[in-house]
Length: 244
Image 1 (cartoon, rainbow, N blue to C red):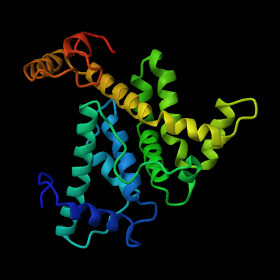
Image 2 (image 1 turned 180 degrees about the horizontal axis):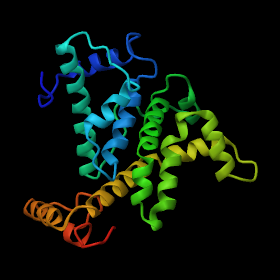
Image 3 (image 1 turned 90 degrees about the vertical axis):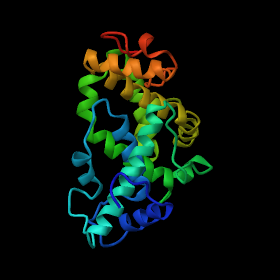
C-alpha cells in the first residue's frame, strides 16, 4: 500500500497494535497519544513536513518494522489519520476522535490508560515540539487565549499538571475536581479556538499571490474562509496583512 491509498479500517487496528507492541522503542506514542499529537501538527501555524515529525512518534528511534510491507501499511495509516485531522482543521470543525471522549465523572480521565489522558499527553508533546513556532507568530491579542487553550487541552495529561493549573487559576479553596468539570465543559471550544488561531496565522504568513489563489478557489467553491471564522475569505484571512 502506498501513502496515497485509503487504508482499510483494519489498518488502524494494526497501527494501534503496532504502536503498543513491546517491540517498539520505549516512549513510542500510543494510538490515542498519536491522535492528540497529530492534532497539534495539523493546527501548526507553520507547515511541518512528515519527515520532521514522523520520527517523534517512535521517540526518534527506529520503529523496527518487520519488512517494507509493514512499513508501508503503518506509515500509510498514520498519514491517513493525519489527513483526516487536517481536513477537520481546514473545515473549521476539529473534534475529539472516536474512542478518546471523556469519561464521567471528570476525575476518571486521570486514570492509567484513560483515552482522554493519552490524547492530552500527545497534545502536550506536540505543542511543546511546536512551542517556538507558536511563540514567534502568535499575536499579542491572542496570547491569553492561547494559554487558556493549552491549559484546557493538556489538563488531563497528568494529575500533577492539573493541580498546578488549579493553584494558578482557582482561589478560595476550590479543588481540582471542580476545575476538571469546568475544563470538560469548554473542551470543544478550546479545540476549535486553537485550530482557528493556528490556521489563521498560517494563512496570514502566505505570500500575496498564494492568498489570491486561495481566495479564488474558495470563492469559486462558494465556501467561507478556511480558518473557520465563517466569513468570506476576502473579508477574513485574505485581507492583506491582517489576522482575524
